[in-house]
Length: 139
Image 1 (cartoon, rainbow, N blue to C red):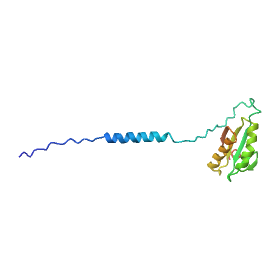
Image 2: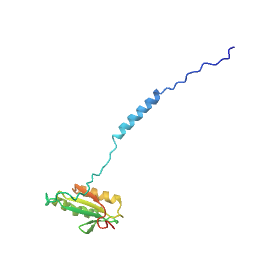
Image 3: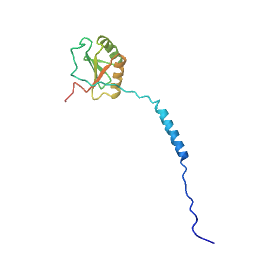
Image 4: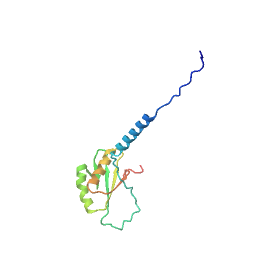
């Protein structure tokens, strides 16, 4: 009748199943991230130090201003989105390397800016820049 200490059982944690689960999760996330499609807007910042002499006939600066009411100003006249497409296509055909500067009022929504950029790109515009509200700058 020896009431001495009982031998301690060594407790082991089997992590094989845990490693298997982590490998499956890693594989799952690696496969699903390949199917994510991210759209990126490539924007050029305006640079006043460009050579204006070379290609003067093919280049021009076109200013498109977004008002807060969802309208667009081009050459001082107000247009909606469809009218803007119709007016900007001939300009882009005439001036193939035109720089399009998109300016917006503070009340214009970001969606209107993105819609304008998409519309200009679909009309053939390649050199698109963003600018602050030029008329009210410094006020």
